[in-house]
Amino acid sequence: MRASSLLLYAVVALILAWLVIPIVIIVPMSFSSARFLTFPPPSWSLRWYEAYLDSAAWMQATRVSLIVAVSSAVLATIFGTAAAYALNMTSSKLVRSLQLVLLLPLVVPIVITAVGVFLVYAQVGLLASMTGLILANTMLGLPYVITSVLVGLRKFDHTQEMVSRSLGMNRLRTFFIVTLPQIRPSVISGLLFAFISAMDETVVSLFISGGEYQTLTKRMFTALRDEIDPTIAAISSLLTAVSFIMLMLVAINARGSKRRTEKAG
Image (tube, rainbow, N blue to C red; front, side):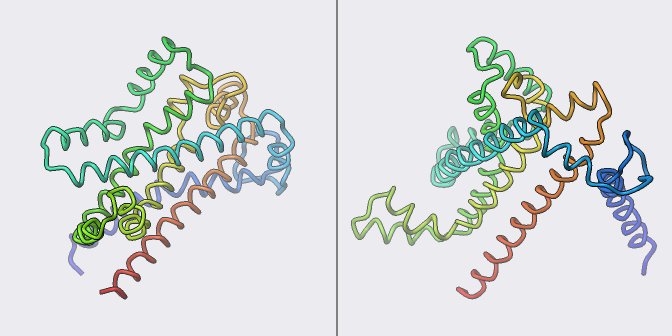
């Protein structure tokens, strides 16, 4: 094996270790019986998971995060799929340039986005509201859906739509009966990524959430700032598990789509 290959493997291994080590440390700490965050744990206990489940404040924040994540993922999928379809079908350079605007949340630093959302919400009265959180996370989730659905649409044979419409079916019905079933894996992948994005989002939530509509990530940040509560380790482990499961579902969905494509071919 050449030295360049060994160097590449070493760099990749270091990067993976850098990403995995925090998880390897946090998960054992979540099972610690100690009053403070300590590693390694002096003994094992489920007390911090019990503290999380028994806390009304933590449960309220969890409900808010789940409602926001599910609602914004659904809305981002609906609008993102429609936008991706329009971008894929149009030949107008002006309309295609809108793709850059729709993908801005991935490019613009999240702090700048958060400040902008805060200033707008302060003017229209959406601060510390469920509606404001859902709208903000829908915006942040749109790029994931658009990117994913565009990939599926560019692999789709649009001749099938033309045949369907020539038989008297309108464009909307054609999309739901002919197009959507074939790009469904891409739509599902976009939905899952939008859900993960909304569930884990912290910076925008710090600016616009509050009161009874405080997200789980903001409450975690506040608890970490005011008091190093080991409950945070338990919640972090659960969020990591949820994100991992979602990514596994994306991978399974992509693999299933590939197999169906190979069988069809």
